[in-house]
Image 1 (spheres, rainbow, N blue to C red):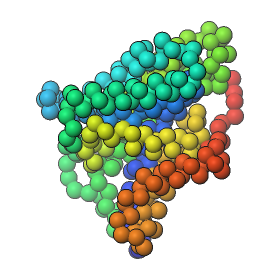
Image 2 (image 1 turned 90 degrees about the horizontal axis):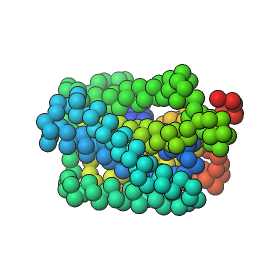
Image 3 (image 1 turned 120 degrees about the vertical axis):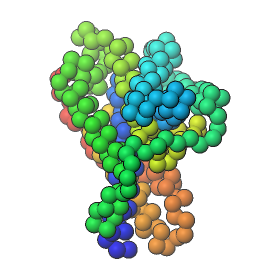
Length: 299
């Protein structure tokens, strides 16, 4: 394989890794606030794309309005998930809450199938024009949008955590939720905002990638596994680790396919296997993740 071919696989890995990073951030934010793995995160991803298509086609909104409308609507659904399903059982064991999120995932998938059908749907590209050439490789313009939106989301979260009272409250809950409550922080509010942010990040990933891959009611489960693998890889509860874990997973996945393609035909079918293998290896060898959680500090 020549340098241009290798670069093409790296570009693909960074593109997929950016999507995994957004999903991993969603898992991490909810886990940090509740100690619960939210397995409805994949459905937030699916809803971003499906609602984007709905607002664009059914409502006739122009794409620059349909995309943010889909993201905000999904964020509202994330808040509703907390209010309707999580908050009434807030004192339940984490395993019970995890099972609830699995039920919510199945409910959302079923509702979308009945409302929008089972066909694959697609959005137009955010920008028209051909691919951008880089050292013999090609970068699709939609990939640049994915990178840009991921970077914007990471910067926005950095400002939220570092410069706002809400961010300080969320950091306090990350460190010790019970202590934060005793200090007067409204932990129920923090949990609700966390679900909204997680849904927003999932929807942003889903709507950004829909022009490239299409969307469907049942895509949430597969992508949730990869987002969870990225979150575990980076260390659950560590937002920066989640971003790094997503990018690393995307690169490992893409470069593994590059290696396998030279010896095995149809190697792309192993993409999901690679993500699961990475997850299992990390859980066995380094369950705290490759990137240690930042040292505790007063928020």
